[in-house]
Amino acid sequence: MITHPTTEELVESVRLWIDQIRPGLDPRNAFLARVAANALAAVGRELSEGPAAEAEAVRLMAGLLGHEGTFEALNAELCAAIRGGDMTVETAGLLPALHVMAKHQLAIDQPSYRPEGAGPRP
Amino acid sequence: MAVDVRAGLEKLAVRLGGQGAALTEAQRLSGGASMETWAFGFDGAGGPERLILRRRSVPFDPESARSVSLATEAALIRATEAHGARVPHVRHVCGEADGLGEAYVMVRVDGETLGRKITSDPRFDAVRPALARQCGEALAGIHKTPPPPGLGLKAIDGKGELDRYEEVYRATGAQRPILELAFQYLRRHTPEPVEPVLLHGDFRNGNIMFDPEAGVAAVLDWELAHIGDPAEDMGWICTNSWRFGRPDRPVGGFGDYADLLAGYAAAGGRAIDLRRVRFWQMLGSLRWGIMCLTMYLSWRDGAEKSVERPMIGRRVSETEADLVVLLEEGL
Image 1 (cartoon, helix red, strand yellow):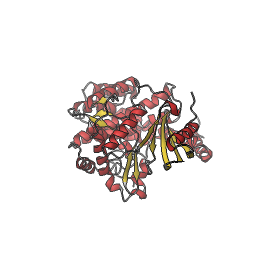
Image 2: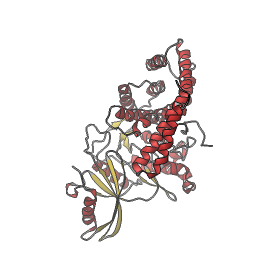
Image 3: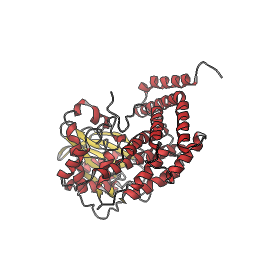
Image 4: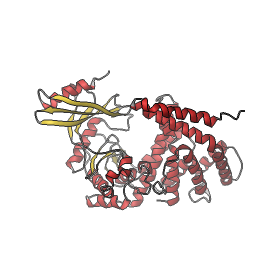
């Protein structure tokens, strides 16, 4: 409805404020404040990257399942297909699609994490 | 009932150090929700002593707990020490008269436990190439210790572990395709059970005291000890969530599989197939993912309202990113 300030900017402003007050906190609260700032950073990334990541997940899952649907419906159907053994690591396209989805979610939740197969931090 | 730990430590100084022994220090180091660690010291009849008190601050329920009692922990540390494992020396197991509740005292071991320091701090550059082999040796010492009788240690195998964690996962209501696929794959690749041995149960970078010169100084945090497949302890230290930013070094972020297995064999451990270690490593990622989910749920259900919990819930995706690569590679 409005253009300024954006939701991202509100979240970022609170995150910056937490970072400002952190040095004055006792060790336990300083730790929790860092976690809180990280949580807001994740919210910020989800706001900016989440819609595209979800749209791609929907596209990939629809491709695997052969029909359109919402994220929730496709995700539930995919889980059921794997649980029931209809889809396995051999299923064409399954692992590549899951790999892309995992990469996008990790980029939102914890972009500094180096997953299996990655080299050392450059 | 609140326990005055400082007063308890003063009493303990006299009990262990003799009449006139006075505390020279007493400092709480860390604490989870249920466990406290205190560093303390005194000058006693036998000279100065630097010790660690480990005590449980909430009542222990052996029925529901996954962990063992502190008395059991102390008994296991003593038993493995007698078989040459590098562990802290248990100085005293607290009883009723000590007024400290469930607790024991060990001799303080100097060194570093922070995983990221071990993988990345230049202080450990020289010793780092030796650590994976030393971890193999340390595990061999633990695994060849006959479990002391009467402790009631739980026995776990691959299938039982998958059953247990799948039950927990289903109960969360979460729907995560990669976790589903990992369960399915691991069930189809569960290795045949082997003769079970005493396991540390939480053998990972972060629970080992490392000395910058000598390497492995002491294996700590024995609360998840149980009986099972020796490859379980190896797979857990190879789980990428405990490699602290160094996925290129599969053992703890500091070493290679071959060194871990060679150290284990050289110290008298039985031959273990790397595929078996990789099974437990993949199960380690899956298990950590589900533990992250349950920590988030403890927040959602109101049991624990710390901001830390839902953020740990967002760590499930790190295990998914690891699992999908492991599934691509195969065991």
